Amino acid sequence: MHLDGTYPSVAQRFLDLLDVTLAAAPAGFEAPCLFLLGDIFEYWIGDDHLPAVAQTLAARLSAFSRSGGRVFLMHGNRDFLLGVPMPLKPQATRFPARCGATLLPDPVVIEVAGRRVALSHGDALCTDDLRYQQWRLQCRSAHWQQQFLSRPVKERLAMARSLRQQSMQAQAVTETISGVNQAAVDALMTQLDTGLLIHGHTHQPMLHHWQTGAGAGTTATGERSAWRLRWVLSDWAAEPPRGGVLPITAATGTADHWPRG
Ligand SMILES: [Mn+2]
Image (cartoon, rainbow, N blue to C red; front, side, top):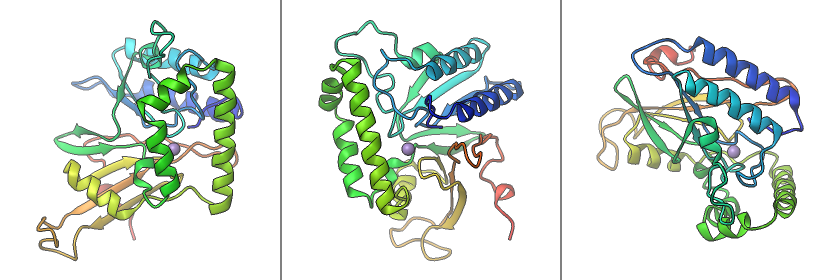
């Protein structure tokens, strides 16, 4: 969603759809679950700095969790500091707690109607972008995070702004956010033993389906050939208006959901 103060219309549309989606959550045997798979915010400099849109979102999510829903958050490449303890302010309320939410690792496997479904932000799969993966390793290290979070808010805001500018310049050169690497996708799905992967990040919403190995039978590595699905979520944008929510039910990712033709 990349929520920030720059595009209030995007934040409003997201919050409105969230209200509709949460209100429509079916009453079942278990609590309805909401998963936000990272880059909820355009940037996040620490849980001690709460932008207005973050306060609004936290209030809505907290109300949903108090009414029996369950909320799960995941880090993206913009908001990877969300929920990380502040070295100099250990008593600061963590953002997930403020939302009544649980912070998930990336990737994570959930079970839906007996099927294993993998959820990820998606940036770790863009392995062709070596410079980005180096930066990812660095900024996800405890050392870098403790150093960054120990700086005053003003300095952290300035650093976040400069990082966003560098990221925009890099994207202007390559014209697009790097796509996922197919070998990395297959390796992850084999490792997680799942036939359905849901992620965002690439801003290229699409349902991909393919067969592992060359046709039917067994693959070169001896695995049984199988159909795999990768559902890429839409990003949220102001112009033209874009964005959406993927309801996950027992039928998600089955043949009924494949595009025709
Ligand atoms: Mn992202």
